[in-house]
Image (cartoon, rainbow, N blue to C red; front, side):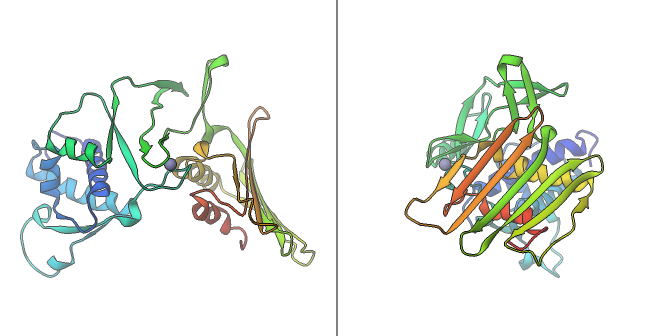
Length: 298
Ligand SMILES: [Zn+2]
């Protein structure tokens, strides 16, 4: 590390470059050095590049982007940030929480530098200019930017706002993750019965109960989970699956019976959020089931 930049700053650059990796064509060959130069991070020193390269590898992996450097294995070829990698980013495409399309653009805010790269990204629908008015809200004493991070090119809606519940009448801004009190998920059908899972926050974390109908033979004890686990579940629902931006109903009228599901979120002050579906599912359905599958077979 040079003295000029902090680790946190380098991490921010890595996060920015990961968005470039997400947007480039699958199979693109590049390296950390090229990527940084192209995004105009050109005043980094060699020591910073070492740090950046490592941060980029970690951040890419966390975002389901595979950077294949296997061709350099067991070879002594010089500095890691100069070595090329092949980008595999198909699993990293972000789904619109409303329609499920992965044809989405990233919002660029402020006064960006116009150059060839920018024009190309705008033409390809990978970027969208968001202007320089940034709406923010005060949440827990901190100012939080509440602008959408993406735009869906298929359904033309914005998404990717932080999970902030605004109640303008009361001049109130709350983070959903702070106000969820219980989560109820139910799935089943007329023929094969249904499974209900309830996760209710308590002073030791949360208590999970599973009920199966009909299923008198399968009585399961309630399970106490840690506060960390509770936080992780709520954070997955709102931070990753963008539950606050889902539609409320998903219905396929052409199917009779079949599978019905319901997700009920109880918030503080008796507020309720209700989502349900009949033979139709939200774009983040598999990810949603994964949250509950740790407690019951679904
Ligand atoms: Zn959409």
